[in-house]
Amino acid sequence: MGQSEGDLEQPSGWSCIAENKSNTAVAEAAAEQPRSSAAPESLWSSIVSSTFGVFESNPAVAGASTLGYWTMAMRRAVGSNTTMRRLRSCILGLTGTNTVASSGTLWFLGLCYKMPFNSENDSVATQVFAEFLHDFSSRIWITYRRGFVALEESKLTSDVGWGCMIRSGQMLLAQALVCHYLGRSWRRELKQPHAQEYLEILKRFADAPASTCPFSIHNLIDAGRPYGLCAGTWLGPFALCRSIEALACIDREHCRSGETQPVFPMAICVVSGGADDDRGGAPVLYVDDVADLCSGWQYNSVKWAPLLVLVPLVLGVAKVNPRYIPSLRKTFCFPQSVGIVGGKPKASTYLVGFQENQVLYLDPHELQQVVNISNDDFSADTSSYHCSVIRSIAMESLDPSLALGFYCQNQEDFCDFCERARELASQSEGAVMFTVSQRSNQITNLTMLMELDNFCERTNENCAGDELIYSGISTKCDDGWQLL
Image 1 (cartoon, rainbow, N blue to C red):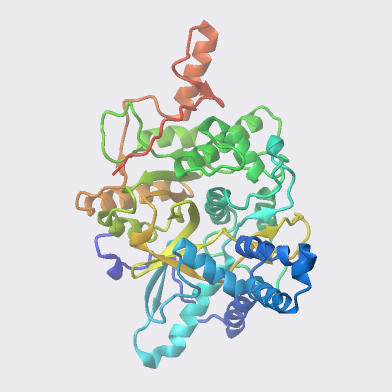
Image 2: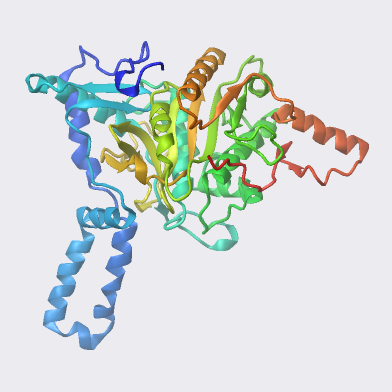
């Protein structure tokens, strides 16, 4: 981490180029792109296409052959995914598809892909790009859906137009689960049966209120109500992080009581400042608090639970302050990185890597029909959960409200993450996003909050100022972000 990101070395054991990789696997990765590029019906086509219904509903207009011809022509244009994707990109300010340069260094969720500048090495560059595309298209892509069970009293059966932040958060969480169960080196192979763990991960994000789908949009909204989350409204990264944390803690308590089997295999740590934090400045990750959290998280004999660190931030006013861009780029170089929830104002995306000054992302703004994935259907069609269309956005165009995500598999991995975070802060030239400290003087970890809650119940004292629910998680809706 002492080098500039252009000179950063690949972490040991994370090589992106498999020199003996078979040509068959490379061909499969490249061949998948045209299939995935034919994305499902988008929000934009459904909005614009419906406009032309007036020509059919009015007999006088529909009878005009000229207007009928133009109506048919416009329907064809609107029905084209390519046309509507370009229109959407213009509206949201998001750049086009497959924008990866043919040479240079690309960082993607902790892995480095180096494509040589020398034209004599075109075959090597092609190989590296195919490896990257295989990696990219293996990430779980979660988008708008329609046709799911109505979201309680709202009667909504689709999250189109408002659910992009939730979908982006689901993608980050899915990547953490993939790293946990399958490893960062896992790739989706088209001609092989699906892994059981892969199917189980997809099942957990199915759009249903069932307990077998703990990370569904229904359950996330229920868990996030104390933070203002409700169907049909947009939310920010802070509320999203707290909602994920609440879901994990609910699952943990159900497991401890013997009601269900565990579905969330890791502890959650949301790093954010608070009104009572006298340190000021950037949010602080306290190592001792994390140690208490991970050692007491799981109900079994595991001494240190895996950890998902979420860091909601506001890095500017209208756009990201340019001073934070170097540090933001370097977080993608962390081997613990599971991406960033961010994007344009009111248009959240899942940021997964960068090349030069462009951030690569997966876009949730595609409207797809709900699908049911069975745990034992090893040949199930899961194509709607993957995309090989690479999109990018300029770093300086990002909305300043975002959330970083890091998955630490064990205590050693967490210590490595802390060292990298400390070094990142020391190199930030005053533009520190978050810091790491050994201990806190505050009661901030989950275990101590639960003890306080139990004490108040035993002594029947008034704990109105603490607002403790969900087994000790503070539900104060004050924004815990620091405007940095």
